[in-house]
Length: 154
Image (cartoon, rainbow, N blue to C red; front, side, top):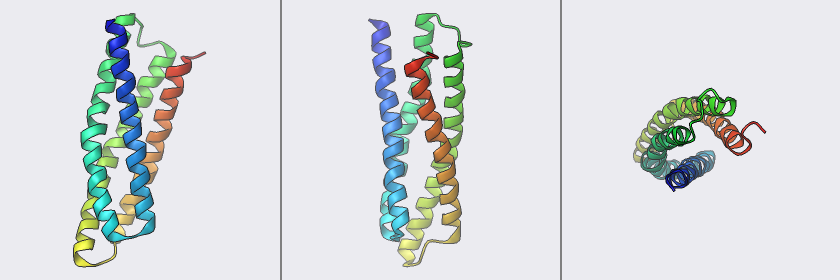
């Protein structure tokens, strides 16, 4: 029963982590491409909030539940699909951490531009380019993790 309980928490938290990440990225991408400074300011506030409330908490919960499941199953961390999953997770989180910081900076630029009635500054667009690049790498890593978790090297 303990295994199934932790597996359920692991699966639900991965769903929240992935769903919040993809959903908030989709909305921020859509509004940035519309170039409406006011809408970008509003949505970027919510995206940053969602990342702290949902993504950050589940990003911590995932390795804790996953490693506990590995412990219960007495599986070596050197198992190929598991080692790859852990490495990809580290990569995804290493991309996500700067993405959060970039989102905060993008939010701040959008709020300032909105208050001033000005267009977004060039720095916003540099942050946005990095946000897209790092987010794409993190997305690919998470998709590969899902593949490895399901097929386990089959």
